Length: 348
Image (cartoon, rainbow, N blue to C red; front, side):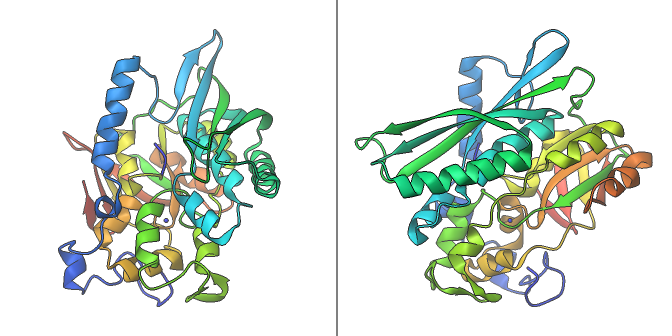
């Protein structure tokens, strides 16, 4: 379940829309780059169906009496290939913690403990140390304890390395979110830190058409393309208390599938009229890959990394209780599958 333009001014969601290739989505797509989200979701559904029922869209919940125990498992995806290319694994551990902790927060669960699993082709002390430092920083930001981990050397299976983790969380039974928005709710959002850890297969394909990862990043020549792609995923643990205090109905971590994740909050229409500005990395990916606006929003977070459906009367208080939250839209009634509209751009 693993796997975010403003550098020339104007509305980042609309930049490049005068390009006919973008209008009809003839440019590079996530599927063409190698990741078919629909196929991935079908495979996930088959796995879940075979294994039995799970409670919760972002984390599995287990009733342990007066509380819920929740577990989330995730990895970093092909962001690892960028780290490998520039030999910098210092932020990868942060991403691994973030992808798990954020899924727990989206369920209304406090992340409490984390374990990692590192599989390598051959052991390398320097790489392991960098990853370990990232895990420490990620755990500190998420407020979790690192309680163990495993390193496996498997040269017949792994080329390079892969890392995944599992995060455990606890929540009072009245603390978890119902998981379903209601028509009339406000949508509150929080900005991302950049591209996070989803859509990297598309991003890598786009930016390496005419650039190396070690090239200067055009909007900020003091950074390289690789460094910009490796900007670590933001961890949203600090938004959980305000959401609980104001009876949030549902939340979504904007990960694989981009803005379509909002439809996980129920089969409604989500009108997003004031999203956060997309960071310059998105404009770079869009231009270099000739990627359509709709495809960008269906793949990346485009500057907004976490959202919640909150009763309208509580929305401003939720936003004010955090450093950078704000009301970005609202929920409308709709029958059938959920629809997300971002500044008029409809996503299925």
